[in-house]
Length: 69
Image (cartoon, rainbow, N blue to C red; front, side, top):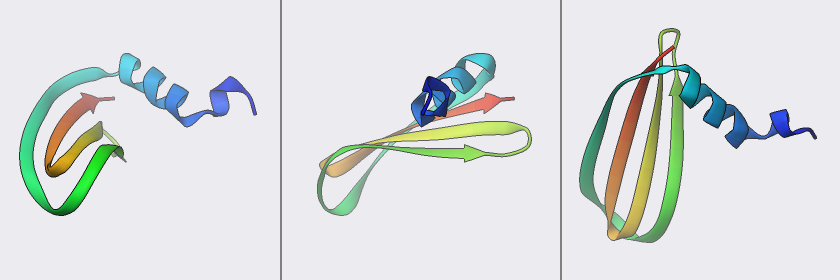
């Protein structure tokens, strides 16, 4: 497995070759207790969007970055 096969390297290189259109920050609650971070990528023909969700107890902070390809 080479370095180009790693998923995070691909995401890192994509993020710096595209134009950042905007970002959004939202906060909310969810049922249960959780501590951690998750990454949700979404790719379309014209845009690439990634959600980074930070869980702290019953709270969640969502950072959405939207890029133009």
